[in-house]
Length: 158
Image (cartoon, rainbow, N blue to C red; front, side):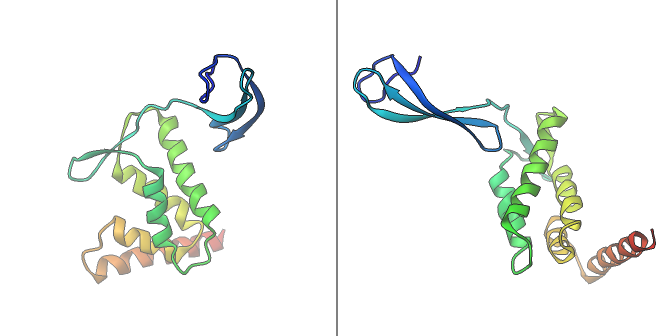
């Protein structure tokens, strides 16, 4: 039973139900049978919090929004659609949740993101890698670029 938010009546009827958030939630449009007031309710899957263990040992809750913001920065002024960025963040979150571990290292997340981003845009990949791997000097950066070039060559040779 869902109470009317206007008159507290327990008898309401569902007028419309729609899946949202890629089927992870349902939006219901309701109407009170007593006063006729219409309101919206949401039903979501209750997810166990996913904890990220940072390199320094600090723990914080996983945030897809934070990951998306990092990807947006890496893809700035690049031909990468926002939908692609959001799908990478969603894919990473799905993999993490499906693994069933309540805690995950930031290292694991970074590697997943880089794997997916490398298939989308090499420049964005290098930008993300430079922040994620905290390149200490230009030689480390050049080594990463050489790895990308070698990967591209081996993919073209196949």
